[in-house]
Image 1 (tube, rainbow, N blue to C red):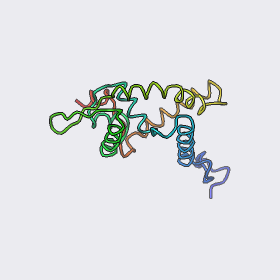
Image 2: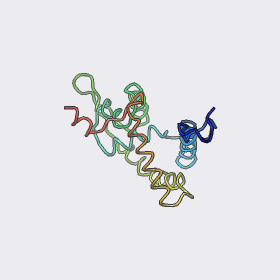
Image 3: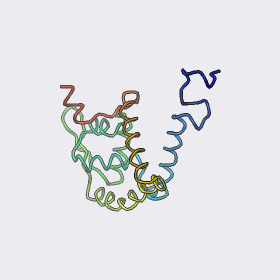
Image 4: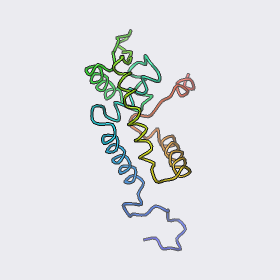
Length: 166
C-alpha cells in the first residue's frame, strides 16, 4: 500500500467515486435520464445523434455516418431501419450495397421540435457549474474523447481523418 510520502502514487485512488470510469458511467447515466425527462422517449440519445449528423451532412452513406457518430456499422444499420420505419429518414441503395441516408420532412420537423428540449438539456447538464467550469468540463471531455478515441470499439472518424489517410 502506498504511503503519503510515496511519490509514485497517482492522484486516483481505489475509492469508487475517485475512479474516472465510474464517474463517466454515472455522468452518462445522468445525461440519458435527463435526455428522457426533457425530450421524451420517442427518440433515443443515439438516434438523436444520428439524425443531427444527417441534418448536418445530408446524404451520408451508412458507413460514413457510423464513423462520424462513433458507432459500429451494424448498430448504425439497425438504427437506420428504425428511423426509416418511423418516417424520419429514407435509405437509398447505392452501388456496392451502400446506403445513402437522408432526413425526411418529418425528420426535419422532429429535430426542429427537439431544439427547446436539447437546449434545456445542455443547460441542465451544466447548471450550477458556472460558465468557466462548464467550458472547462467540455474542453476536458473533448480532450478525453480525442486522446482515447482509438480505444473505442467504434472510433470516431471525421472528414479530416479521411483526408489524412489518403
